Length: 457
Image (cartoon, rainbow, N blue to C red; front, side, top):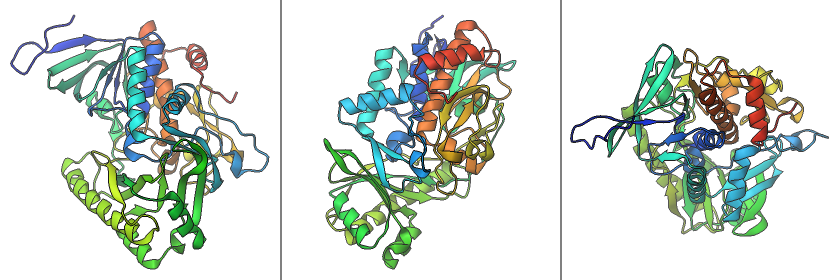
């Protein structure tokens, strides 16, 4: 039943009915909503901001990683292990000049074999286009404020917008908020580890990738160098990272003070799309007042980083800030308890499970942590089921408790793959009227394979 909307002048709370509700239109959420609607579910996507993409567009870094680490081990087969909807997004971006493609790593190939860079603004456009074409109800500028739950099931997500308060009912729900907001509102168990710094990455214009490359090369200070498509031409520099110990001491000391990491990526000439400034919060990023202080501090740090770029890097004397995130970017907010907690031994041991929903082969702390033999591990479906709730799934940075395990599962392409898994599962659960634990794995696997998902076995 749909009742008249409350326009903040009184009246009834509006109710919208769906098969699947996805909270969070970020890295995992966009893919989850696409997967759900393609599997026959009437789907709604809630996003508090006015755009989609989450950390993919707010961070601006390369997407890690669609491939196994084939360059880190001799004789290992090159294979793309994340495909399906995530690759469709890259293909759509390529049509509008919004990606480097899967560029080759020339230096630092024991960290990642490829570098996939996207245009942050075009990603927002393509994500919205794909969702609209698929028929997803996209509710941007809409804040999740609560959840109705009873007897181990979520009944409705409660949202607020300038149109008033609404309840969104569904057979199955997905939490892709990053902070675990829907899970927490629904009564799921969680902790707040606060084990990663927050950041506000910026884009800097009026610069030179070649100038940066030459400056680093003169000092034998290149730790990562990738080439791909930039400003319509192939074989151009798209990623550089420095060996900090080989840079001028004054630069290193000042960079350390502001959490400035000397790495950048780009798909455009004269533009550093990704310049990262870190800040370690004393408390969890769910603390509003602590985050307010961090917002100011990180913008100060952006300005200081701009001065370093202008002062030290040839061709960057007139650099300017061209892009920032509207708010701090987190690597972890709440850690939601799920039916299985993936371990670092599972990951680096290349373990696969009897309920795999994807394969993944990247670890963000490589080469110190690498998937054994340049292979992959499997992410089990049970690791995405929120404990204690029968119709709630979670994907993205809010799963995996151990820091070293999380350094793999929180990465963008892994989150995208998780999104396809939970979106597919939620649609099947809603159609069958079953709980997430009663869903047939055979049926889920078949649907994922039909959606282009790659499995190792």
